[in-house]
Amino acid sequence: MSRVQLVRRTLLASVAALPFVMGVVHGHAYKADGLKVDHPYATPTPSGEKNSAVYFRSLENGGKNADALIGARADVAERVDIQRTEPGRAVPEELSVKEVNLPSGQAPSFRHDAASGYHLLLVNLKAPLKSGDRFPIWLTFRHAGEKKVMVWVQTPRGSQAPQHDHKH
Image (tube, rainbow, N blue to C red; front, side):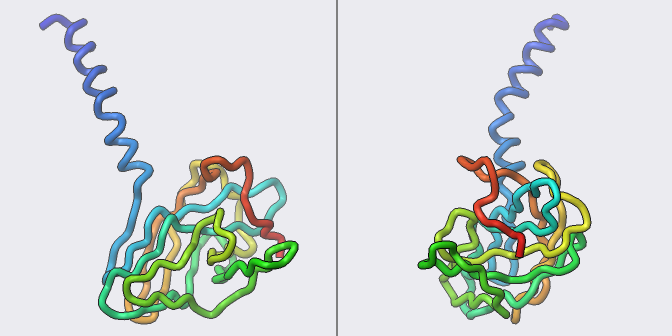
């Protein structure tokens, strides 16, 4: 086999493998004790913004027993608050909550584009979040304990900017 043929085959194999590699890169989920945290992500912070939010494609309890998300911590922020978006007002209100119940077989919304649901507010960021960054966050569940997941910073599809104003 000539060198040109070898390079051509290598390139073709690389291009053919790209969709599989991209699926692994963009499809990250964490499972433990019946809980599944699918695609944790945060939005990039605009200049001067000290807060951001962490969302999940889904947070599901596939286990037999109910659990609850009761806290979170991250090294990138001073603290992490659990918040619920309350619709029905001219400007949706974001309220801090102590926990999010996770009944068996249920998946409360943690998406950036949900009219109502939850998110984790990163308060007093130590540095701006830039698209492409990754950082760990530790989620604390009442029964499953503390679980570490990696958060990817990205602009959500079909969006130029974060959907929530996090200057509270």
